[in-house]
Picture 1: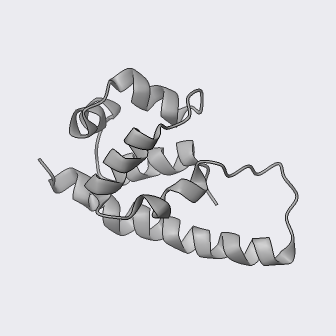
Picture 2: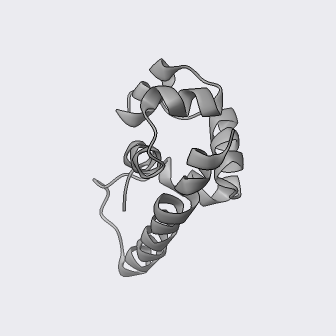
Length: 104
């Protein structure tokens, strides 16, 4: 499963947007997008809300990926939950990202 920085970058790339264009669509600075994508800044609630509105998803669909940490050992049930998370990420990246390239 992708971390939030990786997920944001994949969504942006799948939408065919540069960091600058994404920042314009979300009404944030390019510097913020860069910091979010390289993991030096955590997304705010407002950013998650804005991104989810642009993707036409509930913020709850994005929030689990903000705290995801690959270094923590997980149980079998958590692995199953991560598989569901992977499926959700695929939807966000492959289908919902296209909304970013079409919204004004």
